[in-house]
Length: 467
Ligand SMILES: C[S@@+](CC[C@H](N)C(=O)[O-])C[C@H]1O[C@@H](n2cnc3c(N)ncnc32)[C@H](O)[C@@H]1O
Image (tube, rainbow, N blue to C red; front, top):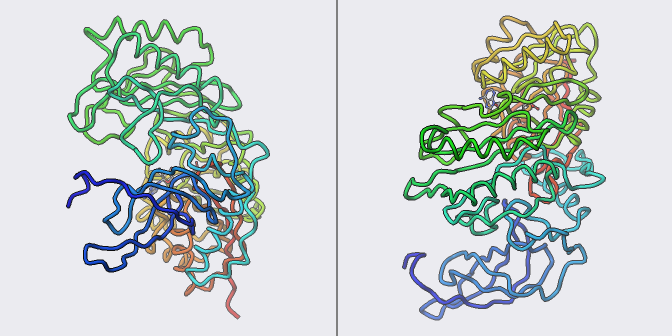
């Protein structure tokens, strides 16, 4: 029987035992199959906390696992809370709004410990997660989706196809939300249709908004399936007019994306007003950010990460350093000020162009940036640059991979600082260094994404010199 065939939901009382990778509760109940034999049914219950007893409707009761609708929390965790968000029940952005912040932080620490333990590391080296004093208004970038129904907002939790209409967002700055709501109103007033993925029809796909916490500058980028010309011109002119009073908006863009893949990308970029980038600052250094530039999304916590990386890396004025996966140079620039020479490697060419420019604009002249896949770039940079004293790496969620880690191991930097947004790939990567006599000394998780499952960490790995 396919999942689409209509099956009556079945009610269960269940105990939440653990959380899945997306942060939803998991429970196991028993059911009878058609022969009357007992079968396990795994339930996925969003917005629950381990230890809670709940009443749910299982939507696919004849399968091995089932999505559920939460009907009642019978025994609530003492860590259960209510966030002051009107989208509390529905929003798929913050999946842990129901969980008090100290509970979230403790869970993240344990999660990192388990990931390390699974690769044979001592979990005790993991320190308690550093949280935020005020875990709201922390994001400097949001991506909202337009729906065929005319909504602009976030995807619903457990129902990704649906987009609810945004009223506010407590993890983003008010300025960003207000400018975004103006775009939403403009789309509604003109009856513009949101993109329908299955049919590949509709005009508006996404709205990306980013704001610097230091300069205050805002970028708004509307992603659409058509260029802002011809019949659309007066409609787009009206958008420009409506955004004009928002004087912090220094970049209003129209990104044309006709591709099927529903990602924030552009075949053509049209600058409707202002520049095609905004200025941001982090750790006292200035950066130019284009619409597709990777930049730390929680600048307050990212500064703590940089502080920790500097403390663990202990850079010295005579030393050489490599920054792998360097992006626009968020770690490179503060380190470059403290070492003799620094080489950065990054796959996105525009980020490397930005890193070069950022170094110059910040008066830094001892950096060498290379636009290349780290898997090949590491050989080149080691050849050109020689053996580094310090190597910092901050790869994407998938990690650096065995080839890069073994190459790092063979190049024998004295100290490695590994910044990671995925404890599992981090633990696998660090395990690759064992044959090269490296020791994982400490792991410090830092919470860059309150109310979500994500956790960042910074770690110190040292070379034990041969006896
Ligand atoms: C987590 S970000 C870190 C960026 C930078 N350290 C920062 O803090 O802004 C990971 C970076 O790795 C880059 N990247 C992804 N895959 C890569 C690859 N195969 N080789 C080199 N860089 C890559 C991404 O473009 C991104 O800039």
